Length: 498
Ligand code: AIR
Image 1 (cartoon, rainbow, N blue to C red):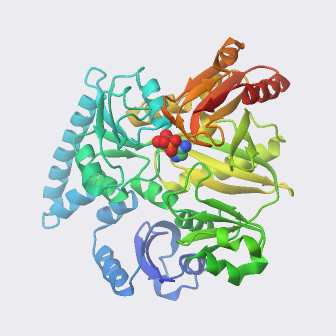
Image 2: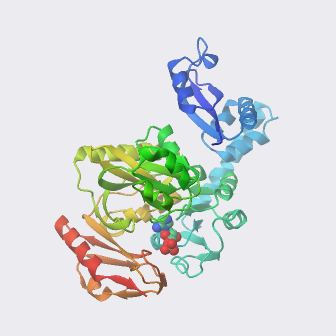
Image 3: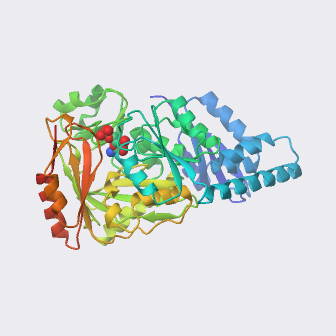
């Protein structure tokens, strides 16, 4: 495997920055903390906090970058730490100005910025916000946008997608293509995503040009690939199952003692696609022949999800955890109950882990953290989604502020909403029936619509496929038994066939 180098910035006790390079970030940082990393340690100056790092694949490149950052002013290093690309750009333009002249220039620029942002914040001049992807998540996000002064733009290849007819302007195009995403975004104020398979390089360029991206491209980049996601957990001491990186399914043969395990494709999997259980050696052929992670199978007591919202000020709001019940044969959610029925200590632990994770991503946005509660009551992160999520659909009817409303509040710079539940709830996903593919027809819909405190959401997908998410039903009730029994009833009653 290719070796990577880390160029990092540490904050010292005298508030100065130390720039270094290493190929073992954690070890190196521990040495810094212990004071055994001699070259950075002087009598009065001691590194105390890791502020920033970037990963660079080649040694020569990494050395060049280290030298470059070392030569920067403190203000410029600070801008890099804060990922304030606009300021970075300004500071680069001002490299040859005297300190005094720069101060005037910066002041004038920031006054402009304030004026511009005040103009944007005026509810009578709606923000222009783009959504990459036009599936059901985009559709429900658009429904919530109708409460605010915002002009919505959707980019998606399929002009009949669920979100196509609810937005202010629809643009047909590939969210994975650099030029398409860049052209789409360059006249917008802000962009969000509803699926991770987007062109991150274009988002990075747009961010550098002042378009706000929720979540930041750096956070999407970490999460988009299961390998970098797992490495991020390891680096930040966020508990997660042990893993091995594989190039192809044959690699698994060298790790037989690691089985049973779950093979997950590095990039591109969602809704159970790109996940394969490898119980025994005979299953190895089912593995993926692209870069993937092999995760040790966890003996699970419960699976939960915690949605965390973080605004640009770094303020956070956490939704009560939701508890999943899965259909093992499809690897898809069977039904969900919220708030999760769990001892308080476990809830606190899960929320603390989810919060730590989101804070470590250093990005405003809405994040869904899926966690396992093991048989021994350990809490492990399964995976994170940097967007609104299936596990939060109940919040539309069951919580004061829905996950979709919350994301708009973050994008528009409004106060975070109230995550508390109004009533307990459950969600049943409406999935395309097995062996049915083609134009979608709904069986049992009338009966479900007649049920009390039951809310039907159909996503408007014209084509059904086995296991495809076609809609969901939310049930609210004070009585948790009623939630479970209605969920089962609806599962048996409502079918999507072709
Ligand atoms: N999605 C994105 N990641 C996970 C999920 N479930 C949602 C998004 C995306 C849609 O699923 O809303 O646009 C794609 O669904 P389908 O059925 O067209 O594959």
